[in-house]
Image 1 (cartoon, rainbow, N blue to C red):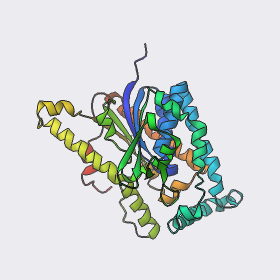
Image 2 (tube, helix red, strand yellow):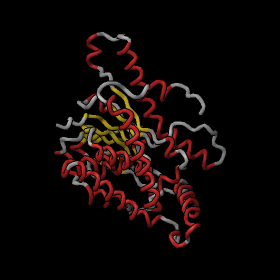
Image 3 (cartoon, one colour):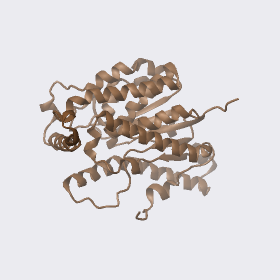
Length: 346
């Protein structure tokens, strides 16, 4: 008799097209079948992966979720062709260089304009894609997977977490709303920007509601860069990475502190019962994504997305082979040493 899958909570970072790495991680987890993601906290591209995963698994099981993720990213690639450089597909060996130049230009141009001026109709092709792939009212009935999607409230500057019952296409778009590219998403009385500014992703919801003790973080923003950036593009890229890792590092610091208090028995019994000793695991994308600059987060070419998917699959398969037995037993990450202490130069 096959063993029951081990319950885990997933934390999925945002990062535009780099979210295809997370597609690969989820695909490998679903194919392997030994983990049961019962709760997912996610931001931006991670939020999109999360709702596709949860809806399709609820409707048709693991294989349906794998197929749905593949269809979603294919549609993202198809919609993104409108933003590819004109004629790039015809220029053979020059296409890759033209793609990089085009994305650099788009990134620079977006920072000198307002989406309220250049996109007054607020057209976002992702809205149609999400609506075609997810039955949002049905997410409220999705008992297999609790969802926590983070967006940033423009008015307060705080993280706002949407849960299953109040997740709509607007909530997902809010979580992924880069303010230089899209108008703020208005929901109720507030407007929202990308959740990565305040929680990429937010970990705290997992500690206030019943969720599996094992927390598996899927990183897509590299933590380490040994070289000091010198060019304008390199500086902007590193600023982007640091900005979108800051909130996660702050929460990991809190987890490390809580684990130290619990481990050294520095808490009263009543407080110890309220705090869970979370088991932390991590799939890092540093090796796979560190060679890609920030503007490639807008690269939705099919070849690029599939390369990231394959890298995510490989990373997840390697992690499962090495660490699966630890799930439910112990952390496979020393949070302080891995994320908070000063690392040795590689």
